[in-house]
Length: 412
Image (cartoon, rainbow, N blue to C red; front, side, top):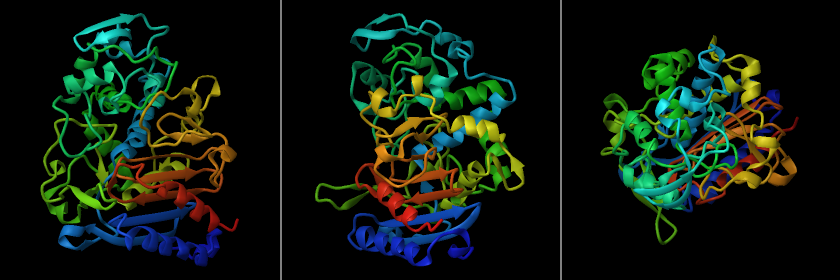
């Protein structure tokens, strides 16, 4: 690990991040265990491991602990999809029905209940870019906001609750695509932003367009080249002792076991390969991915994407340059909305002042349902990965607190 001062960080100020996590979250019992990694210019500046990976068995968090990363899967899937765009196999402006013909006549919800919907025509067809930026008109059933959400739950489309890893959706990825052909869209594509199964659809399309099963594509094109040896959709038996427990907030403000690593569904092959939330991995693995984005798409001697493609991905692609706060109809997101737009697979900072948190214009990032997060700052060449296992992710403002503390530790 490089001495922090040589990369523009204060050792003393970094040390207070460790104290903060220990005193505010670990000793108070708010979180069972945490892991933080900070890199600049591709070099590790600081890391902090605290608490327990498995409270019930008194197993500490270690550098190689395996975590459920949930929606931090989405940026990985989006990078994989953009590889196919670079190869000319698909374009952002393509209508989705070109690749999923059964979706050609999807309509927009007008009235009714599951099994008896009335629809109207879309203003424009759903395009590939709508999947990447969550303006597709698709949704998540667990939002429980509309009758369309209810249809997702009834048909088993995607996760039915925020207990995403506790049980798998009853449908396979192919089954989800077939079921979605029977459900109207929430809104006409491109007119609103709604957190959704859009990235799961991208995973399906990666398999269909490449001719390689989605999970094999990720392994061959991203995980193996970058040396992400512990990232997968399943925890292998020889890695089970490193798999963390997942917890949930209880009624008294403490935490209760939600997913036992000795019994988790992640220990068995998955029937639903979720590009939106199905991966597990280590902080070290995810930092390799984040550092690849810092370096404009190149990592471990392999180029995944061209610099201009990464630059395109981290631009705000919401229509007319709007922010999430202006377009979101979603009841759940891994983002707060002020000062933020959305790129091709992750949130982007469009106005630092509106976020009211120190940072840089053009940062891009996302988080996972178990309170994990990462961000990449292309202005300062910084990448950060934070892992823990507490659901839901909006229980504590730890993501914003970490941003404040980490930027306060930077001296240049």
